[in-house]
Length: 384
Image (cartoon, rainbow, N blue to C red; front, top):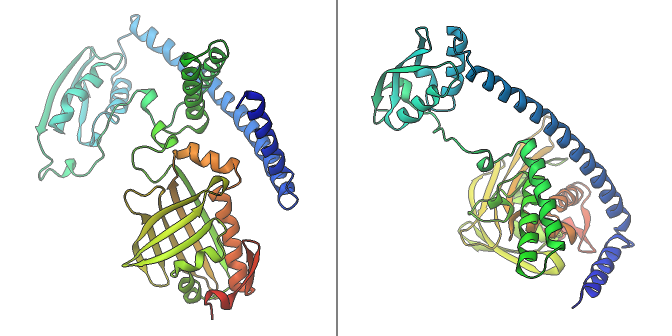
């Protein structure tokens, strides 16, 4: 298949998607709004990158000045600098006392864990104005019964590239490198061309989405490549709403992205969803927590094609209605790329969940709704 045929196919598919007589107008409006919002996001990101770069330049100038001869920093200022650095070096920074004895001589006292001593000393020595570090630390291999060493989160120093959220400057830089990679792909043929396209696409996705590569490509076993929350009020008693949710087999009757949900017993169920281009995507799930009329939580079982987890809470309002709070995360095949592909084919789960909740509200309150192109009534789904 040549490039002209591929281009014609993509153009035809796009025309059919946006010219659909039933949903085309809504899709065109949503696309227009997303393009405008995306443009504003890009402009804001460039503005943040400019400010970030300016602040970094000031920081570099300040460090250069401090290294050029001004080591005689006042004691309180030097202590504040050290305390700021310690907070990123050890699990229990408040357990450590810092004293400045003049001339850049620093004394460290207090309990600390053995595996943090070396990095702590290195961090303190790197502070501009410090000339000598005296350690009077109480080193402990384990927290034991030392109250000030209980709890805490291990501190790990990552490079900016390894951080989960990249800085604005780094994101803009990655986008520029992606553009250079795409330009290189146009000037070359063979493996180098495809390598440049793959590298450029990866960098561009990392810069735009600002998520780790493992989430973008759906590797690492996580559930949260895509996360979203939804809250809706239903004018019906919480007992009635919960009873319907607890019966998963009803879901395909108002959730248009689901083809089948089958109860396997012992809190497990089999799900089949409609993926891009009508492809069926199956997975098994299990209930992890259930409190009648209050809460339902689930997750997909290990090895499932789609990794998903969620929790829905049911709250009784003062007027007798029910507030449903849904929090869901999932990692489709190919991660965020898979989510983007589904979106292009009009099967964005996040948008569909919004529509499904509206159908549920209509079904319970009005006794009817429309799903899969047919009318559905309360008595058909077992709601008395």
